[in-house]
Length: 356
Image (cartoon, rainbow, N blue to C red):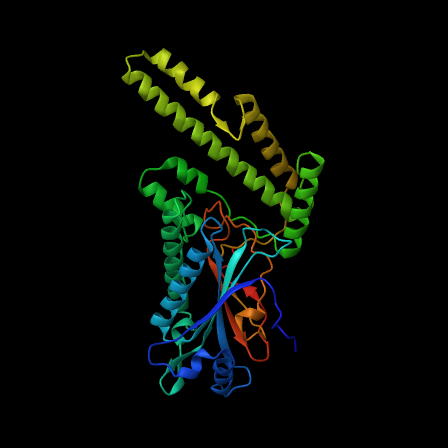
């Protein structure tokens, strides 16, 4: 048994319950003791966890509010008790890694106490649909908060394949081409930590960062390729807009075309990069990708992470770094969340569903 009362990095905790729930449900110790008492089987699933990646671009107040809104949606939708802990980034980890652990009961909480199981989240026929809808709710909450904060970044909870099909339907071939890729590999806490140290050392020594792990090399090459593609697309947009403006001003096709090329060439993104620089960057990315060969690493389409644990409160679940995830075409932190199942005796192994 471990004492978590002195755990650091917890910004806020709160409990939400249905309207007619008994008063004792707001007492954390009493709540989870009653959860345990309501189960009769030794391997009963006592709680579910929804792990949320919070946008670092918004304020702490907004992060708290969207987490509370999501928790309230769980209460309203499933009639369960919800225990929430919002965690700050670890001092040695990625400082964008704001996240929340949302722990819910698996039984409905009514005036007389815990009653029926919420089987809609257990059934193979309904679980996927429910989780996908809750992903949509969470994406919408984040996007509204980002819009209020004046940020241009947006979250899309859909898979890359679904986003690509939507882009093709609206005739956006460039976006569809950008989305035609595999989901980004998840580094994991150990590799993520090693890569962060390597980046910090490279920055201190004033040299180019070189990945130190196999997974890190694959992820770095993929991110470089996406960055190069985005820059090429931005240059193309600038050239198109400049050409149209010059033609509207009465310039001929040749003059307008030259003006468009000049505008694209001087486009800056941090530091100035010319056409030769872009070709060299693309060549390096392609060369590294070819050098990796067929790396025998598992990839997944970012389905629901299902596992079990002896933790009974979200404070006991410390953040280990969510990493950065391109599975939903997001340039920010991980878009979705994990939905875990907790068992009394931890007989179930953690694993992935929807492997590709």
